[in-house]
Image (cartoon, rainbow, N blue to C red; front, side, top):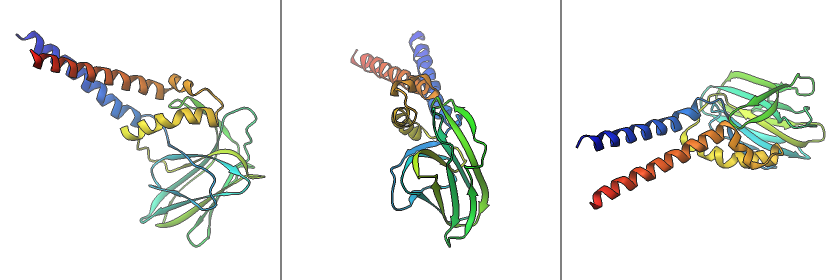
Amino acid sequence: MTGRPLKRQTVCSRLAAFAFALVVWPSSVSAHQPRIVQPSPTPIPVRDAEISKAYYAALDGAPQLFEVRCSRPFILYVNILVPGVPGVARNLSAEIRDGKHRFVAELDGLHARWKEFHKPFGGDDYYQGPEFRRRVPAGTYTIKVIRPGNRGKYVLAVGEREEFTFREALRTLRVLPRLKSDFFGKSPLTVLLSYAGAFLGLSFLVFCGLVYAVYRVARRRRR
């Protein structure tokens, strides 16, 4: 009489622990919310300026503008990066201006010392260029990304407050295989070897556990 309830309690507690890990674990991993964007003649809008996002893009012969808007004073954080692949040019720069086109800062990648680092969440290498961090007044700010010839792939990171929800984690899992192939020249399957792959594995285990629990409940009700 008491055996079955204890087993059900154990199963439920384990499922709850898995679900908790799936929600909390991604938020504890240092990762930008990835966004793949296409070259545009108009500024690309950056929403929620203080939340950490990484825009993966490529220059196609002209500088690219990004537009940041905020209705209150905020911390404006900008960092330029390039994929850590053989032969990549580390000559990317960015210029920041306010809504009145007044100069705010320049991230001079031509004379900067780029740092190589590894991001465990996606399992990829990057070269990190200059960064900017300052509390600025409310308003509109433009970030102009440039390099000699204005060709080649780059990553623009904006915002430094990490907010990695479960929904955002699922969205990231959909984007990562494309990033692997388009920006790092790897097989999309290599995502399985990263922290993101571990998260995917946990998701699969939770799904199987939930299916099993629903099956057991339905089977008992038919008796």
